[in-house]
Image 1: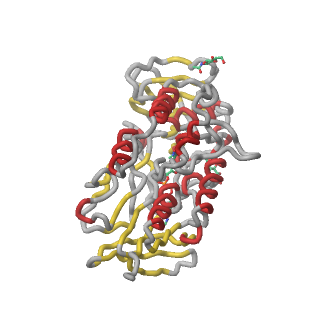
Image 2: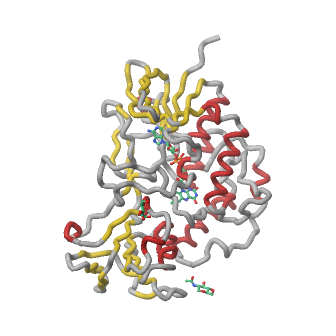
Image 3: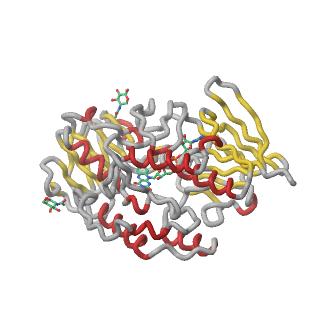
Length: 380
Ligand SMILES: Cc1cc2nc3c(=O)[nH]c(=O)nc-3n(C[C@H](O)[C@H](O)[C@H](O)COP(=O)(O)OP(=O)(O)OC[C@H]3O[C@@H](n4cnc5c(N)ncnc54)[C@H](O)[C@@H]3O)c2cc1C
Ligand SMILES: *[C@@H]1O[C@H](CO)[C@@H](O)[C@H](O)[C@H]1NC(C)=O
Ligand SMILES: *[C@@H]1O[C@H](CO)[C@@H](O)[C@H](O)[C@H]1NC(C)=O
């Protein structure tokens, strides 16, 4: 029998676990490198934060996760399982449609055990270099005790996530602004913001959650968003949260001025402005280029054509249309309509800025995942 291909999977989060399972199904020889001592990636809460709160120092100590302690999922659990391995209710668990983060970590551990994936993972092994040499890849990794190893693999799948490296906007005057700046990657608990006046920049799920979390202890929270139709106003049901248009400029007297003409003297600027792609270990002689908000060229967000199938990226896109394309290519039926509706509905709710959007949802779809048990494809 020919020797099975050796494949290196980098990262043991959702993407790495699903990838390892599929590759094992094809009887390939799989090694999963995981720099931490745990599986679950982003879903493992860590109370620590980076040594640089905005993440601009390339030599800072980096904590992988961006979870905050109060985080609940922003998608319903029905959309967070695998098609053939749904996210179950468990006795003594968190039964909510949008569960707390601990429940997701529990689910991923169960998934790994169910399919025997734990034994494939080399914990405490950080990939520091992946380089194309001849027809193979040389994968260099570093363990906790700083010993290095170099190994040959035929293929590499990059599953390192893309919610760790902060992206910052440029704000006129920021070099002289004297307050404290922090990116949402480093947010854990509200306590450090007690009594402060905080400007939160951003309009997606983190800005929504964090502004409400902080408002419990902060003096004032001002949310600056890019949306064109925003008027300055206090939010309904909150005594200390305001919304504004984008930040226009800041000045050395602590002032933050907004595009709508309003301004505040603030203690903190809080960036909920998203993340950059970052694969510092990857050396492809320029075949794959990594810019802040783009990895390319990639065929359908997975394979760089010149290196396919020997290098791939799993977990880059989040679009319904794309999932349907992928399902069609794999000979599967398109996603059921209820999934698409539920997905779009979730986004409407987040952007509708309705407090408690997670708990106001009728349960018509509650048992819908059961009927998918026969499908054989992972879509997250
Ligand atoms: C605040 C926040 C809320 C979110 N909420 C939701 C939600 O409600 N629902 C949802 O579906 N998604 C949500 N997401 C997206 C979430 O990131 C994905 O669900 C999922 O965790 C992505 O999995 P991944 O495997 O691609 O990456 P990660 O989970 O980030 O895993 C990557 C793994 O790679 C490891 N790693 C990194 N570099 C190396 C290296 N060089 N060598 C070895 N190992 C390495 C890391 O230690 C980590 O374990 C949220 C993200 C954030 C930031
Ligand atoms: C980051 O961690 C330090 C050290 O534990 C802590 O003092 C600080 O309050 C944390 N910052 C935030 C924003 O949580
Ligand atoms: C304000 O609270 C009321 C009553 O709880 C609720 O119906 C309404 O949706 C809330 N408004 C927002 C914008 O969250």
